[in-house]
Image 1 (cartoon, rainbow, N blue to C red):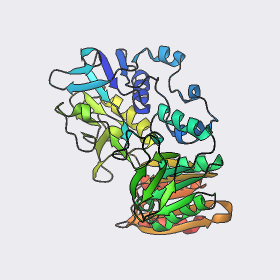
Image 2 (cartoon, rainbow, N blue to C red; image 1 turned 180 degrees about the vertical axis):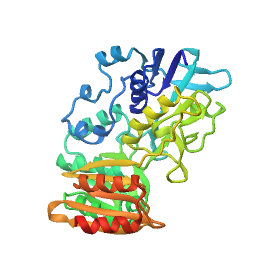
Image 3 (tube, helix red, strand yellow; image 1 turned 135 degrees about the horizontal axis):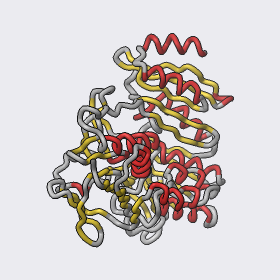
Image 4 (tube, rainbow, N blue to C red; image 1 turned 90 degrees about the horizontal axis):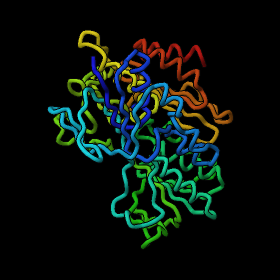
Length: 401
């Protein structure tokens, strides 16, 4: 049994890992190291209720003083870990080198930035609490013209929040239809119409050519020659796993920390959350997910793996589940969809804001998309857990129509 466990990353995955260790009866020391100046906090509200100003930073916190005492955690904020050596079991932490007995890597991912924009004010990504505070303050300063670069889920959420606050906002998306690379064009158009019906301008099928402005952003020049005026640019073009500190560690790094099907990256070392790439037995390949639910569940699973023998270890093979709140719609996706999948619309009721569609491939149900249809999403998710065929999914769909 380990005498202590170190968690690098004061994230959702890191906190859930600590909770799971104590729930399982682990009595040793648990050290939680975070590189931000904040105690671990929840991220989904950063693009929604917190950005709107409806939620305080205190309510974002994942760890109250009482919880920290209950879990007997040794928490250190503003403690960036810069390297790992798996042979000597040491970490280089701000202030010196420390040994570890067992390790949980939960360092998450960071937002990808536009190149050559570091010296221009008014350009933001949205990943951290500090990011959200800066954007929220900018929303409150007058009536800014906002351009969101990237029509993925984060970009769409920020645009929805800005528009709901009465701010003029334009989404610039390189694809012809936002989210089509995940949901396919037909479902992507449903999301597009939701935004245009709520006053968001869409510029699709075009790249950003240049950000105009010397010290302060003034506009966004597009590849088709259009110049969009902008006081504030928010970039949502994906995320990069935080693995640079692991480059010479001895771990395998390939768009994430590579793990086996149990989340083990090396003896006595596991990874969880956005930074982890693991072999998913159900899909027969290695995957990396940037979902809240996965971070929470994988944090638990990875932590318990450190307490198990090889014979006791279980594969981590969940059906991924994700949600996004945009305007008055709760968009949920369970499974892994692909634009090339078979696609069937089950419910399409624009006037009620309800929509359900399913995805299939190689004779299997692969994913379900629901808009204000949480019951349908959970029902089809259950079918996926039972490895339902595409025919069984279609038969069930006819029953619930």
